[in-house]
Image 1: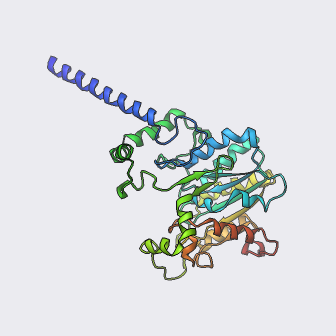
Image 2: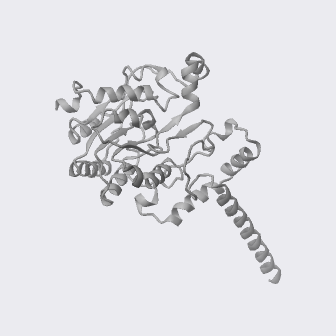
Image 3: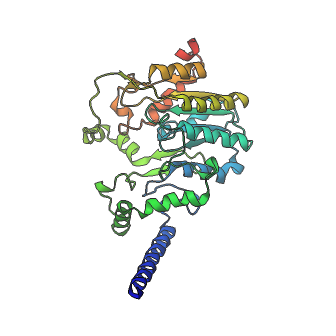
Length: 343
């Protein structure tokens, strides 16, 4: 029995030592950039939580810049340049990119509630809805890349940080993280854990820019797409989403969003993303959005002049600012007619 307790004690001490070492390295490296605050979150080599960065940048800068115009949505919002958007807005507009990776309607709802409860005035809003992610969930994520900032959800800071520490302890992450830390070399097997793109964040507007890919396309578009020929799969033409994404729980959140928009007299527009897939929003979903937000919805999903051109995309998930600029010009044109405005 004494030997058993002795071994148990040794194993406990060893386990505690390992845990202490892991916690120390986690705090030292702060790989996900959620422990310390940074002036600039640019050029991360670990994939970070974009919702956290957006919230922290807002908290850091709001008292200085007094943002009053916000872009909400997933990483597809990177196509909409805040400074370009400002040129279409009334004088005095101060834009901020409040995006999150795979942003859900829940994430957008809690952000508007945060503004509402903290009496933060919003004059203008641009919402980017994606067929594949916006209506995927109606609650906070448990995954470290998608979990919402605790100030938005009321989650304890300890539980929030524990989510990231747990992700750090994963052997899949640790092996890739320390291999890159020690060698400085990125390997294909690191995809999904580490970032191989040069991503620059504007320290005022929080705009996200993929510098290397945009630069490569600008300089040599032919070779850019030739090297990625296998990535851009063949599309047989427009298809319509057979699944109705907006269910009762989503509809509840949409109604909450509408109430806040109308209560605060916010000038807003909703863009349905032009994704490479060329899948049209489900007809029932479109009908719900058109009826709930009449005159504010602009559908660019499916097959059109934007989605036909491979050169409008970095890869099959993200369209470029050249597309965003064109969409802004269209939706802010007084001559534009949408199905929503015809109803």
